[in-house]
Image 1 (cartoon, rainbow, N blue to C red):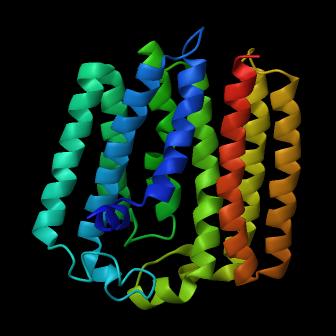
Image 2 (spheres, rainbow, N blue to C red):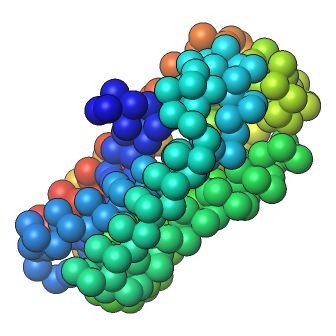
Amino acid sequence: MFRLWNQLTKPRVTVLVLATVMPGMYLGTSGYPSLYAISITLFGTYLMSSASFILNQYIERERDAVMYRTKQRPIPAGEISPPKALALGVIVAILAFVILTNYINLLTAVCALSALLLYVFLYTIWLKPRTEQNIVIGGISGCIGPLIGYAAMANALPVQAWIMFLMIFLWTPAHFWALAIFLKDDYEFAGIPMMPVVSGIQKTVNQIFLYAIAYSLSVIGFYFVDDRMGYLFLLSAIVLTILILSFAYRLKLSMDKVLAKRFFFFSILHLFLVSIAIVIDSKI
């Protein structure tokens, strides 16, 4: 049962979502967030994120069945029936909303629910099957972690929360398009119009480089919009910016699928380290 739950809920992706909640929580209070608030907020967000992935797999079960990477997922593999998966996703989403509303506040619950709705309806159902820009617009759902964290602590969404939202928004296309390069054949076979399939790898690596530049500028720019950020964050941001831009430039020149996969994983580490730097510097 535990293995089935993990396959349905993509816990490795959820960990990154939770990592983006933490900076918002630390910036949303003048002191330190309590262990109680952190635990409940992260648990509720974990459940909502898990529900979104369950519903995503329910909706994409037929496409998953024809892609090599996804055909062993629980629904196409017959480990759980589609109606049961749908019911599980809805129940977990309701549970997450109730927990966040009752033990944190309504704004936090609404932010978390909006991430699920955007991921399921905007990205999975509407954009993903129709346009190569699916991840640019649909990626909004993955940017809400800082809003959840800020709302949990301050019951408000100030400009710093939205700058962190923008940071993840600019990070997302480069991150997912790198994976799409590596999985180009799978996406093409399934008829999913990801950018490498529709416009080719050359355009995709060029777009990855441009978004890497925009993302890097937003990371460094955060130093100037929150006076709690000091030289530790600024130095970390500069070093991390140099690393990701050099990686993106190498990918731009080589167009190598293996390097694209490495960039995908490095971008996860990059966002994680930026989040840690924000948390640490906010309290020094």
